[in-house]
Amino acid sequence: MAHSNNVTEFVLLGLTQDPNGQITLFVMFLLIYIVTMLGNLLIVVTVLASPSLDSPMYFFLAYLSLMDAVYSSAISPKLLIDLLSDRKTISFPACMGQLFVEHLFGGAEVFLLVAMALDRYVAICKPLHYLSIMNRRVCVLLLMVTWVGGFVHSVVQLVFMSGLPFCGPNVVDHFICDMYPLLELACTDTYFIGLTVVANGGAICMVVFILLFISYGFILNSLKTHGQEGRKKALSTCSSHVTVVVLFFVPCIFVYVRPVSTLPIDKSVSVFFTVITPMLNPLIYILRNSEMKSAMKKLWCRKLITDQI
Image (cartoon, rainbow, N blue to C red; front, side, top):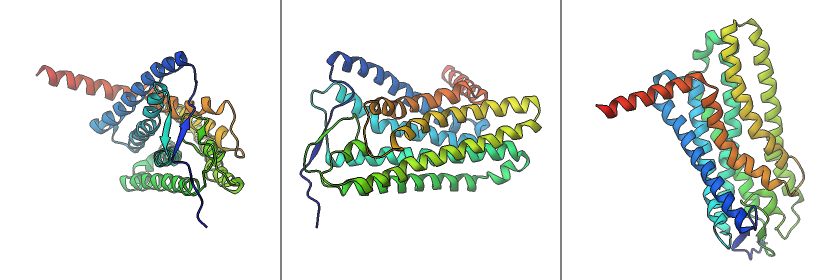
């Protein structure tokens, strides 16, 4: 028997009901979104335009930045519009679309961070075979795996959510359409689906997070055989990766590794990994990577010379 669905739109409560607070948040999130887009697109352009960055690490970094830019664009514009609106609504199809996109790119980023950790492991632990192992075909294959992984994760979430009956209240105590706030509105038992969400989201994040830290432990242990200069360079690169991994996974684990429930702090945690983390990623890689900073300076100097001519 088909489920009844009387809900055609959802009302998002957002982050605050205070008008002054909404204006303050609008200005802050607008600046964050501008920095996010500029920073991530700057990395993409720099990697594409700089021959010196033609290595697997920067290949993955460019796609990480592209994912962050699109992921942020699936969240921030709607958030900014709602902060200036009296009635914050989103249609049912648009809600499902936002859910799909955010989990597609969020899931793909999980697997991309695994690919980046594998790249660093090969580069540091097997430097003589690095280019033969991490050749272009392998990099493209790993990238395809990240997209397939993200797509499967997102489709599973979408299939379960779109099939639920929503026949009662349509007020979502959140600023985005996400699994747990929507599950609380479904007029049916969501226990099994909640377990699926934990397995498809939280458990994957937890397992991948643990595996990544184990891999970085192996990498750090292997640095004992490296010279001081090589050790310093490897530590700088790995510290950037570890910082990004922590910023991405810890909030996700907090939100998704638990039974279906919402906590007052969930919205603040969601702001961190949906809005702030995509801004911090390019800043971390730019500030802590001397090759990236050097390539950006050369690109800027080349542009100035071209403009003068």
